[in-house]
Length: 181
Image (cartoon, rainbow, N blue to C red; front, side):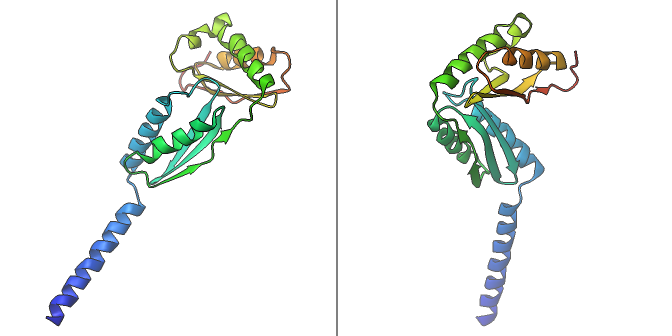
């Protein structure tokens, strides 16, 4: 009887160790799946628009959210959506909520018109999910996202700099790989 109890105890400890190891490390395939699902969840948020930029990093079963949003509810909605993804055990929410400002709201609209209304950049306005994200905080602008060419990146930066009342423009646009002007 004592020997049987020892065997069961040994098997139990082994199964706990194997289960704990499986929970600690996610396979590369699981990480890629989680990345795709996080991107999908972010893009499906109802109030996620051109004036918000949400980024993320997947490290095993932990997702770290970054970026800036104009609505506080978008920060919590993003976290709640990501928490529901299968395989995600922890969400670190580092999304910044931009302070409300009538001046920044005015600048956002002017920047949108200047960038997406410019003839060479109008092709991006036709997309349902705008690839050029316009982040305005206290009169300072950050352009985030991806464009097709270095020329489009430069044009977007020039258009942003042409809007009066802006203190600084940081052009963080990435150029899609394999497409150069």
